[in-house]
Length: 142
Image (cartoon, rainbow, N blue to C red; front, top):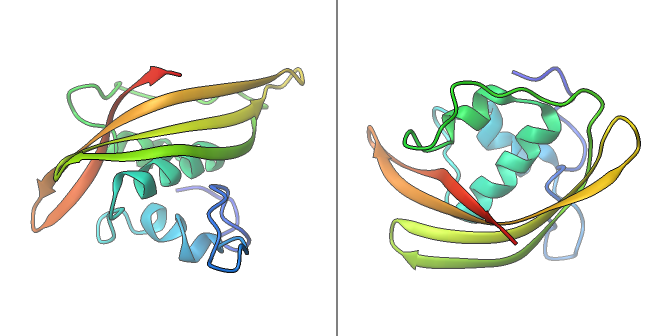
């Protein structure tokens, strides 16, 4: 669990109908803070919550939402990395249990060098007890 504040705008950049940033608790926070009971309802929401987990350095959430077939044993975060923003380019529902989300995430490393991660991520939905849960499977560089 992160020690970062639970209030303020959500790092994923999602906005409401009036183009105002959604608050963390009403956006990705509900998934990150209650993973067991509140799964992300679709692939885009999972992708946004995973971005937020990278910002907040919540490896437990990232690993729990990574499909077992491609999940690494552990995750580490590069010290001094600052995530600068997320742009969702497209989202595609392939069928009831598969989806793809294309995004660009911007970051700056500890030395001040900025970079962009452009990826088309693949997601799969599977049963988890009585819930249906989306998982990140893999991604292709954009």
